[in-house]
Picture (cartoon, rainbow, N blue to C red):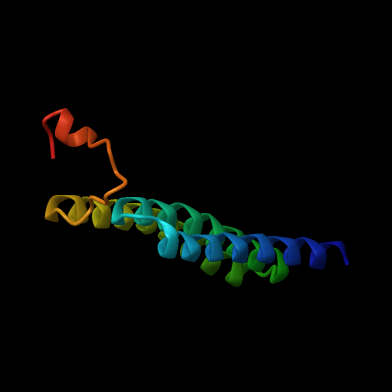
Length: 110
C-alpha cells in the first residue's frame, strides 16, 4: 500500500517536471534558456519516473535495465542540451530581444 503511494507521487512529480520543461520550451524567449529548461527539468522528471518504475517493479533484471537507462539518460541529456545551446549561440540565433547580457562576447570567447 505505501509503495503504491510512493510510486504515484514519484510519477506525478516526474510528469509535472516534464510538463514544466514543455512549458519552458513554449514560454522562454531564446534557444539558450529553452535548452537549459529542457535539459534540467526533463532529466530530473525522467529520473523520478524511472525511480518510480524501479520501486514498482523490483526484480533484478528490471532494476539493471532501468539503472542503465537512467545512467544513459543522465549522461546524454545535459551534454545534448549544452551542444544545442552552443550551436544556437554560434549560429547567431540565440539572442532574443530581451537578452541584455552576453558574457562570452564580453569575455572575448565564443
